[in-house]
Image (cartoon, rainbow, N blue to C red; front, side):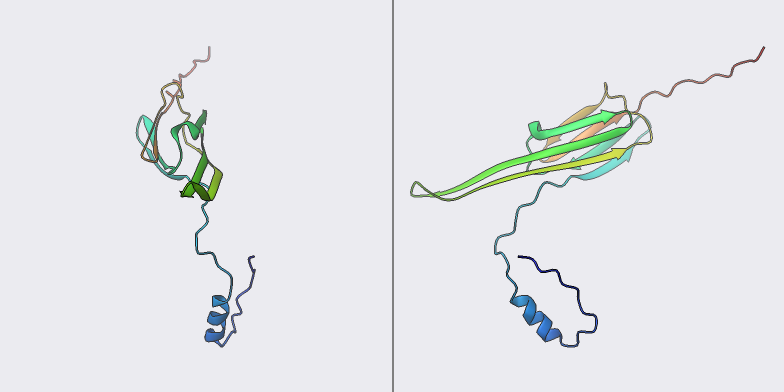
Length: 141
């Protein structure tokens, strides 16, 4: 049960509001959340380098898609935890979550040469830029 309350700016009794907060229900165990993808992006002359932190996710549950200059990283968490004592199940929990990040880059990506590595909860992408088309001046005859 969550209460939505607007803080009274003119509340003059800080002890009463502090005491009221102590009486609200709370959980001793923090709830698990869906994975969050945090990114570091750097640009070099020939490529973009992306480091994405996705802890608690298996390599096969990560999906990276490239569409010209649009990059999408998706991850799905599937964890099951079970506590047993004397052969009896005391607690069994399952956690499922999904996270996705999309971003656009200034140049199109050469997806055939792109490279991805995942180690210790960090996904590293090397995204080479597509060669820009050459331009030429047409002479008008």
